[in-house]
Image (cartoon, rainbow, N blue to C red; front, side):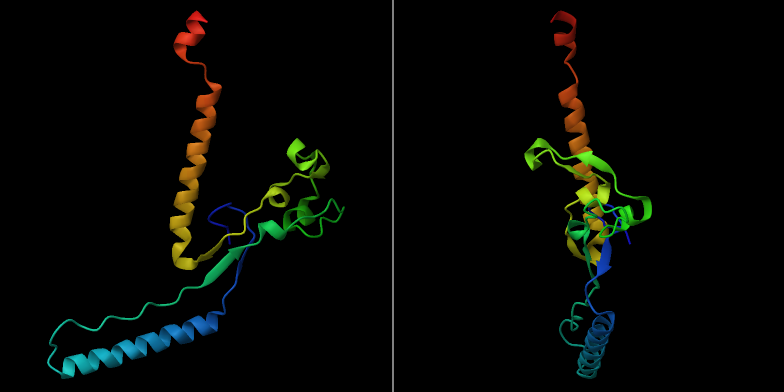
Length: 149
C-alpha cells in the first residue's frame, strides 16, 4: 500500500483487524438493541445514535528503512531490489557518502486510519504544489527587472 503522505510503498498495518471487526460488530449490536427499545417505546424523541466504528490503523516506516550502502540493499526494500544509489549528503548532514534512493532519504513516519487516507493524500498534494509554485516563483526574474536591469 502506498503512503498517502510520501507516496512510498512502506506502509504496514498496525492494528489487529480481528479486534476492529469485533468492536464494530459490538457497536452494531448495541445500536440495534437501542433502536428496538426506542421503537418499542413509541419512537419518541430523537433516535439513538450509532457509536463510532473503528477503522484500521496504518503507519509508514520509511524513517527506519536504510540500506547503509550494503551491496545487498538489506534494510531498504527499494535498495534490495535495485541496489543502493551512491551520493553525497548535504553539507548540513556532514557531506558524507550515503545512499540517496528515495526510500533511504525519506523520513516519513506518519500514522493514519484507513478512513483518513484520502484527506491526508489531498493535503500532502496541496503542500507539494505550493512548494513547487514557490520554488518556480523564486527562480523567475520579474519582467521589469529583466527588461531594465
